[in-house]
Each structure stands twice: as structure tokens, then as C-alpha cells.
Image: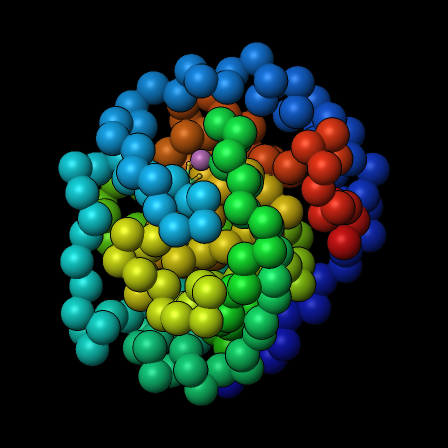
Length: 224
Ligand SMILES: Nc1nc2c(c(=O)[nH]1)N[C@H]1C(S)=C(S)[C@@H](COP(=O)(O)O)O[C@H]1N2
Ligand SMILES: [Mo]
């Protein structure tokens, strides 16, 4: 296993708070104007089920692999059993879509993204990450600094049960302090890269740094 990734968190705070306020203003003026969401299906607990493809991709849990590659010492291809062997993290946190709906107090389980990056021996100098979905279309991005936060999870369970197919199972990303579009479903790959490549909605005008604003009643201080 690779060395632990150690990154300083200093310097995120002020920029994060400021960007959060700016993003909130953008959000207020864009609610209800997201194109291409298609059929939005209501689900348990107030979630809406989103997909930018025609449906929900299917994955045999035994065949599932999470690829971790790019700027790493050890490329990984993690089965669900491999993920279960890594340190497990639980957190109960809200989920909020940029369009306005929100689900309070969702219990999440999985592996911290930082623990996966440590297992891969990710280059701590690398600036960013790209995330890929086995739906073949959706992508996301985080900076390395964001990815190392203790509230960014590779989620294998929601509400105490394996992540369902419509919620992005068997494995999805959960970025607690940011709007739901950062929480990519049907996760298949994580690439360690040197520049941020904007994700699916970010290429369509949404903020790359999607901090949920304090004005929405959240407590997730970007400084964390
Ligand atoms: N692959 C994929 N991931 C995705 C999306 C999507 O359409 N496809 N929608 C995003 C958006 S905008 C939100 S709000 C959440 C919704 O999660 P849910 O469908 O589990 O409620 O998933 C995010 N991740
Ligand atoms: Mo969303």
C-alpha cells in the first residue's frame, strides 16, 4: 500500500466562504431552469432520482470494480469486497440539490475518498480529480484539497442499506458540503490529474466549486 497522502488544508476557508455566497446568488437566479433533467422521479425521504441518460445503468455487484488511476503509485481496481476491507466511515448529513429540494439527516456509509487516495498512493502534488460514471456520460471534478476533506465519501450505503440502483449503486460519490450534482452516481473511475476538468453540469454553466450556501441553512462550513 502506498504512503499516506498528507495535504495542508490551510487557505481553503476564506476563498470557500466567498465562493459559497457567490454561488448562492447564481443558484437563486437559476432555480427551475436546469435543462435536460428529463423525467424526475420522486423517491423515498424526499429525494428525486436524476439521470442524464435514458435510465439507470445496471451493474452486477460481483462484476463491479472501481478504477483508481492517473497520478498514483498503485493503480487500483477495487471490488466491493476490497472496498469493505478499507476503513469504513459513517456520517449523517443532508443532501441538497441546486434546484431547491433537500433531504435532511441522511445516514451514509462507505470509504473516505482520502482513504482511497492513500491506498492508491496518490501524488499529493496532483491538483485535481476526475470522476467517471458507468452510465457513460456523467462526470465530475474535485480539487485534491476538496477531495481530502473528511466529509467526502465513496458511498456504498444510504439509510443503512446498499446504495440502490436508482441512487447510483453499487457505489456513488457523496460530497456532503456541495450541491447534489457533485455526488456522481454509478461511480466507475477516479483519475488523479493536474487540472480541474469541469463535470457534466459544470460544462453547462453550474459552479465548479458547488459549496452549499449558509443562507440555505446548512452548517457545513467550507473550512470544516
Ligand atoms: N451519474 C449521474 N450522477 C448524478 C446525476 C445524474 O444525472 N447522473 N445527477 C446529480 C444531481 S443533479 C443530483 S441532485 C443527485 C441526485 O441524486 P439521487 O438521484 O440519488 O437523488 O445526483 C447527482 N449525480
Ligand atoms: Mo441536482
